[in-house]
Image 1: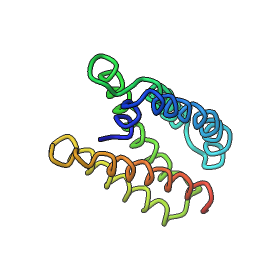
Image 2: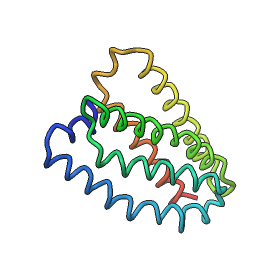
Image 3: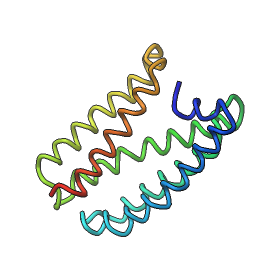
Length: 152
């Protein structure tokens, strides 16, 4: 079960999930556009990828992952948001400002993430642990982002 399925299982949880997504977006995306991008000398494509991921994440927070058309829309948005992590990580790893250790860590994370994505879509039995994999996927991403922000 994914985080979204947990949230969709109860109206109060869904409200909390949507509210948390909105509040997070209000803080994290101005940080990306106003500080992170200029500081790491990231290209305009980074802004587009972050914007696409941000809009998808915001919508994911409010569209429940339930059977039917809403669940289908939720899953498409989740796939798009997750896919944006790949170019975002590549651009971050190629930044001239980040250390070589962080560059290697970024590409190691990218290799792990791509392997995970391929396994997730090809080996159905691992989906029962979706929440664990989802947390590792996002925690890894934010560890790379925070490291890029603070360790140079």
